[in-house]
Length: 159
Image (cartoon, rainbow, N blue to C red; front, side, top):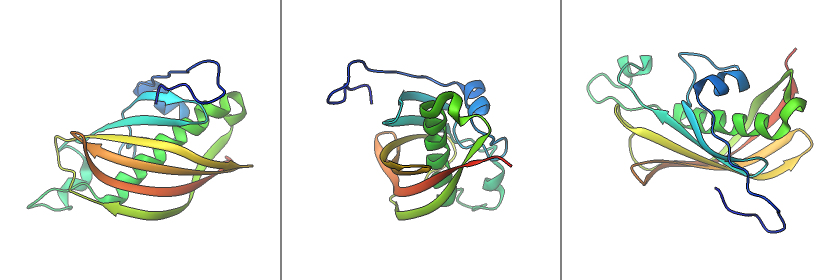
């Protein structure tokens, strides 16, 4: 992510710990699906980390004999990483706004994510038109892709 973009003058690097993430997006336990942002370039992309723990509530029922992180929660981790990117990109203009999912396309799940895995989520902005943003995302564990998707989100007032 820390690459100079054509025509850009400087490379921006941003790291968000959990406190910065909860200040940026409204999600809270048990639905906070990103623990750290390790790399981010405003208006370009971000890399988030989700440490998958056996203590996650969904493992009680998905599945008790072979615990697997639900695919929709992997997608949610992608969306939350993108939401942090949007808030970071907009800066003060993001105050009082929320990032809402609009669509998910081409979602593919390659292998299961299990307790003890560290999910590395990479999102890249594909397009931005007014309040609608489109992203491509990949999630990996130990360098192996586990999921990918494209999705759109809209920025709306938190009313």
